[in-house]
Length: 270
Image 1 (spheres, one colour):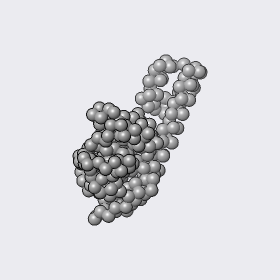
Image 2 (tube, one colour):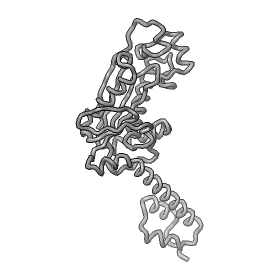
Image 3 (cartoon, helix red, strand yellow):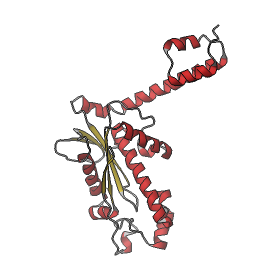
Image 4 (cartoon, one colour):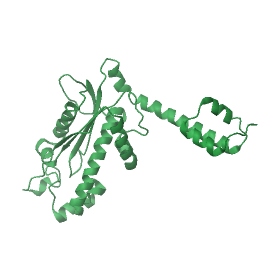
């Protein structure tokens, strides 16, 4: 029975990535602690392989375009259609053909902490990322559907690397020279759309946290502008702020004269 390296030394080598011959030697070690380390390592490797396979499947739609010679495929999604207050934030992302973004999914299915980590990982790995921010006045003027359509078009046509094709989350678009596929629940079926949903959601949450410091009476940091009972009561008690959407109820019926704020931006993050 082999008793060679210390358990701590083996642990460190397992973290770094051992050679196959080292694993073979360690499996001959009689110590229970070594066997536990190796069993944990195998479970971790199996989970990693399963996650890599899942992420690979999540790029199946993009792969259909790649196989047609369309190498740069963007995903596009938005955050903030439903809230009574705050901007509509839209993102477009082009990913490389191989990614490692553990836990990537529709932003609504990912914890806030993991979204923050994924946001940084996406920016590190993406080929190109663009974000559009449309203020409430633009939403009131166009209506939310047309505002989302405009924002998605802006994002897809202003990426630093022009996409040859794109996948949107249920938004049909016609963009000259670009194949566009609109996909219901695209943020859970396409890696590119999922990353766009993460970028849009995290960007908007940060903006709402900033607005919370300016207008603490509304609790924007907690509900992100959505129509909770507490939010609606705050509107009735305090009146709306410039970031409230006048075309949404109950604000629409309040006959407001002051227009909503207009603050539109297009950010090329990468």
